[in-house]
Image (tube, rainbow, N blue to C red; front, side, top):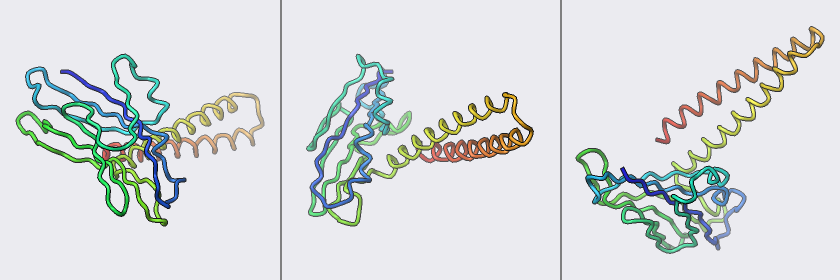
Length: 198
C-alpha cells in the first residue's frame, strides 16, 4: 500500500469582527494521509487529522510534504483538495476528497469535510473548526492533562518514600488517591472521545 502524507498549515487572514482569542488554528496543522492500494491506483482513502505543531517534529521530513495554505483552492494530490467558498457571512474551507474507497468494493466520487469556517459575526469566534477537528483539540488537551497528572503522581510518590511524619504521609496518600482518581477519569473521557473521533 502506498501512502501520501501532507501537512497543511493554515495561514489565513480573517477580516471579521469575531473574537480571535478562540482562534486555535495557529497552534495546529492538518495532516492529510492518503492510502492507495497497489492493485487499485484509481481510488484512495484519505484520512484528515488535526495535530499540534509540536508533533510535526516527530515526522520523517523527507517523506512528508509540508504546505502553508493562505486561501483559495489547493490540490494536495489526485484524491484531495482544499476548496475555499465565500459568502456574505464569511469564508468556508472544505476538504474535498475524490475517488474515495469506502471499503473493499464500495467507492464514492466525492466526500466533503468542513475544515474550518471564518465568521464575520461579532458574537462568535473569528474562526471555528469543523466538529471532528474540535474533538481532536479536546483529545490533545486531555492527553496533556493526563501527562500533567502523571508527573504530579510521580512527584507525590517520590515524596511518600522520604522520611516524613505519619500525618504528612496520610495527606500524601489522600492526594495520591485523588490524583489516581482524576487520572482514571481523564483516561475514560479520552477513550470515549477517541471512540467518537474515529
